[in-house]
Image 1 (cartoon, rainbow, N blue to C red):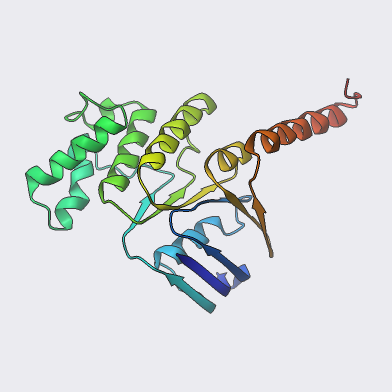
Image 2: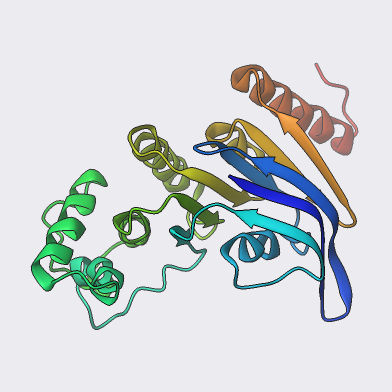
Amino acid sequence: MIRFNNVTKHMGGLPILQNITFEIQDYESVAVLGPSGSGKTTLLRLIAGTLQPDAGTIEVDSSRIGFIFQDHRLLPWLTAQDNIALPLRAAGKIREVARRRARSWMDRLALQGFYNYYPRQLSGGMIQRVSIARAFAMEPDIMLMDEPFSSLNAGLADALLRDLKQVLSGYKATTVYVTHEFPEAIGLASRIFHLRPSSFEETLITDPIADLRDYYNRLLKNASMGSGKKPG
């Protein structure tokens, strides 16, 4: 469980989060949606414990936390499997056990045959799959994702999102997924936290297909109004 109670955080003297209160149950998937500068990454760092609140309290019931970043942060001099195995080795796993688990997660993310490839030899989508495999190989109870597909084109991001949903369907973790794309949020989460400057709102997703249809209808309406044409 993750619980925020009246949490406030300032960065550079400016209020980023103000009196935020919410609770995330074990194994729940929540998306955090908002524009740049709204505090999405700050929220993740507070959950991870790399930042502390200026006011309020935070409860996180596990220290086993995985993190998938916007940038992959792979070490260029290590192969794909050794990049995944590195944090396992740091946690005390022997070399072969760490490599075996790395290969297992690479297989689950359609990276068979690429164990000994270096990052420079992989495509952008494959690099991000390695990054995802590295996070899951640590077997976290809580998975934090900070716009992991923002640097990829829409088609590739959509394919990776489907792969990620499949992984999460077979791996139980409390998931907090940060994005600025509503289709990504609604495709992964049961609830959406809307972060805006000085505000916080929560939406429960009960019918993803209907909500997604309404979203695209609003885009079309706004596009028609912006062009001066009547929707027809």
